[in-house]
Image 1 (tube, rainbow, N blue to C red):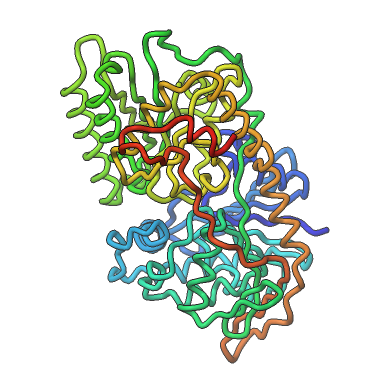
Image 2 (tube, helix red, strand yellow; image 1 turned 180 degrees about the vertical axis):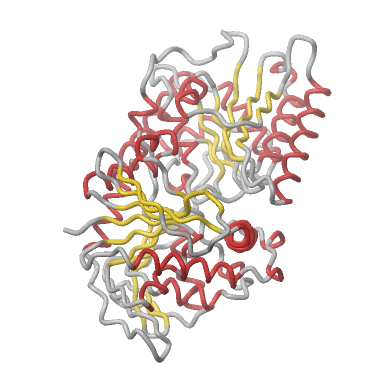
Length: 501
């Protein structure tokens, strides 16, 4: 068994993987087991695009191999094509994509440069696992250099509906790039269905009887692998009763990156609506929103920050008083260790993305709860996690009244139902941890058929990466547990309960 080579935009210190998130924990554990390599951007900028890669070996044998970007590459590859074209399109925000900016050339060039550096250090039996939208063309570039190793790709963000992906001027180049992998992994079955639909109708792809996808004669597998969390990490500490304010204050918690995909304005408006129609809960209900800063140099992110500041100020001014501030808006990073107690002391976890690949906050909130007195998870149906966490209160984040109604149901929910829902949610979370996600993907990749010889020059110069592992998955749209024949702001808790228990 060869080494595992992980490729990602940022390379995490294995000793600090627990602070980086569930996927980073699983990756670090896999690399320790395989004495592998973590390859990617150093996070530094350099004036020399031919700068020598830095190599660092940790005490547990993990090799970190990092390369700096130039300022031009950072602005055009990273902030440009990756985050101003692919990110908005993949989250179905085509209106925010900057197609006309000419970023694709830099995106391609960085992938070529990283592929050349990586290929120089590969052994024949290394298994390569490429992560996320920054490096979609990497396998294609490696194949052009004669690399015949197993190469898998995992997309941590959602794959958009076919019509959205077709808006990308370079969509056919990206489709061909996907076919250079042996296995393409996505978060949810909805994403698999979207990719298959696009490839069949937008790239003349064909789904074969063996479950593989063929694009221009090249075959590869597509399958869903839902990312999980390290549940033991969030169970640590004393299982004290929730509500650090005591019996008089109910805390609702939101933890998100400051991003236009997270539905934060909708969350604030829904909480304001909840206070408007439930005056009895004023002065004893608080929404705490932790919004971690991200990509602040991108205009769309400064806009969302200003909007949230305006909304929180308006709601606090309308409903607050000298002794009670309805919304606690925190625009700074909070450590994962601190989040454990924050989650545990919240009666409601409110997760409202407009589109999300998975959303691990939903799983973290549930895992941190005291099972004897758990809080209630409210979850957007457009998060990948909704496919698994059906015992949450599933809402449409575009429907402000529906969110407000779900908040009312959650804060009034009895202990018995809260415990039943929590038990069902934990069964799902513990059956699909970060470790099982990583091992499942790597097992599927390593059992894929080995690709045939790749011609280094001539022709279309793309590999036929044949795999027989993935079967076409049907779209599974999670049903809301708060839907009923009652008026929009009323939730039939009994009907909701019967839907799952």
